[in-house]
Length: 441
Ligand SMILES: *[C@@H]1O[C@H](CO)[C@@H](O)[C@H](O)[C@H]1NC(C)=O
Ligand SMILES: *[C@@H]1O[C@H](CO)[C@@H](O)[C@H](O)[C@H]1NC(C)=O
Ligand SMILES: *[C@@H]1O[C@H](CO)[C@@H](O)[C@H](O)[C@H]1NC(C)=O
Image (cartoon, rainbow, N blue to C red; front, side, top):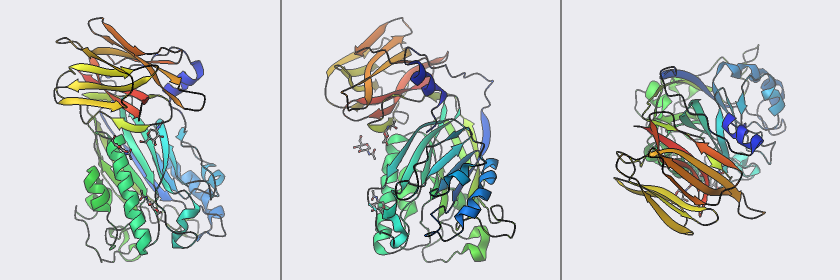
């Protein structure tokens, strides 16, 4: 993971820092578009590969620069070749060749924040059945900041291959695992999944629609732009060889809008001829797929990156913020922050565990938070950092704090005309990371 500029400031200085306020004036374009690419680059070591990766991966490299965000799968043995001519300022960390790496890499022209890799819980098959247990397949999450205060959650995935009963079951379970993750971590946020699902709408035993599209409210760029919005029935044989872009590939682009970023995959492009060598041979055993993503920023909410340690589970209040200003802030703390949340007109939203001493700060009529200071600390020598202290300041000049102050500090300050009304971050029994949701007053 390349750290975003915000994180870099913190790690280098390690003392009181202030996150620059997002500039929410008209100098920011409110609309725009960017191009994404998903490509299984077939970079398995030559002995087990079905293409000629060494020779071909070098030729893939410069072609990727034409896109703004690229997700590749099967980047194993030829990462040096793949990255040799890249011009992306941000990329995820390379996890290594088989059997240790997961083959997933994201390259981006936008800042990548908090990239996380997850391993599928079930895998089936060793060497045969798609060789899934040779590598820790899974997915990689990155939050991409397209403009200050506006994030899109990007998922790069590679699911279980093959079509035997057990592989089909594993793949269905992988998609459910992903759906649950998205519904927690990306609640209320714009999402784009682009990767190798190894699944087909037309295949009996696969269920992208029921397991992913419906539970996460996603659309498929191919279905929308090529198939007139209609999912093809099971049993159809839609071979790309015969039908071109009307044919179905296992590589897919799925997307949805969020509360402050509307997105639409305006195109679905199956790149049949762009990634070929001088003789016209494909450079991998998959075709790349691409979309132009149009976005529109809605300035009622802004979100920030989060600050803290590496543990916990991702959460976002974005979907559950009530109408009007929050009524109260709820914090349980001891040496660290155990639990935190807001009382909205629509009810209580809290994250964290049951420890610590609970305190409630009730806002007066018209009172709201104008800054939040957060500290982090280590629980013990072996554990990762957690949030140890918070202090809010309100527009009436009141301060309210809980937990234990340390010298690793971050201050979140919304731009003029915005208030802190919710949180994003990671938590389990305590609060691991905290970031903010700002709402326009
Ligand atoms: C993901 O797929 C693997 C097979 O590759 C399977 O064993 C695993 O159970 C799946 N994950 C989940 C959460 O079901
Ligand atoms: C989703 O959140 C629920 C409730 O907080 C939690 O029990 C569950 O483990 C989370 N799942 C994932 C995949 O993060
Ligand atoms: C946050 O939670 C997710 C699970 O939802 C986890 O995969 C990740 O490692 C956690 N930490 C960070 C820094 O993202």
